[in-house]
Image (tube, rainbow, N blue to C red; front, top):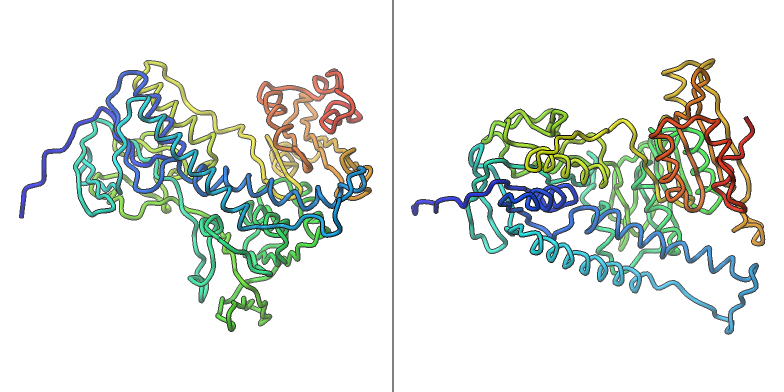
Length: 460
């Protein structure tokens, strides 16, 4: 057996070219470090390849159904009787083409930054050495003075009979055709987002939710508002329903529930969570501890091995792209830039690109009550039909909500359900992060007529 070639040496070896890994690699290289990044898939990670970016493009595509339906109420009439029709294959192909363009851009960014891309899947040989095997089965050994694990997460198939017959979220982006009817299993943000996308593209959607409501962990009132709107819009949301098995049914599938109901459909989407992608890393060879299928890290992103670090979804803390990017940059700034800093995970805005959209920053009403008690919290809310729907005379109403601490008048949480919620909450997050009070909101002059002005005109 031939002796393995001596490993190539790098100051920093990054495993995973997703958001966190790319951010760390480029920032470290900008400080003069010799950096290599290992990736067995396309460059860009979950967000760019099969997550945030293609999903948001599909959300925009699906939204045209309602926009076109509302067009006559704003004076726009079709020139021909047949009007427009939805062509999902064309949309999905356009989205894939945009993903390919972004992948190529990231390749260029790495080259410009002076980071060496090593194609293939990496596994630890020891605490400083990673063996990489590419698609041709050829190998290479790399040695890093420091190693950063940024391999992200993967969708989880639930322990369900016939689960291999269903799709996970990754599969949706590769579809060439859409069936007439789809069962979506799950009540989290991925399930709700794809339920809205599929429904907007003309698919009949039945959403199966184990719990009593969707979007557990978000403000309950805001989540309920989304659920009511989804149901009113035509999505069949079935809560307190446990999936039992997926079975082949002629040319299609059937989803059998634990209560014995059978739901015939052309596809089943299993949107039941994600977990860190640790398979094949051989972390035990490096002595990196794993707890509950995640890599625990300290505030400086260090694992149980002092020169091995981890960022992003593989740590399973706050699994959001901007968090992974900031963790990667903070690691590089601290380690190579002599600019020590840590990421603040206490106040992170988040959004669900459902239809309608939900966005939030800070504490939910429920969390605020747990921390401060019913006498210590004051809630302000506004519900109304936005001007975009005034002529069409349709719902759903917009919901805006401020959760305020009585003792200090400080705004603890800011929540919104409605069009452009994420864009508006992004700006509100600055105020909440600076400790703004309800009085600060009140003395801010409204920009009229807008939806966001309600945040500064709610009655005191």
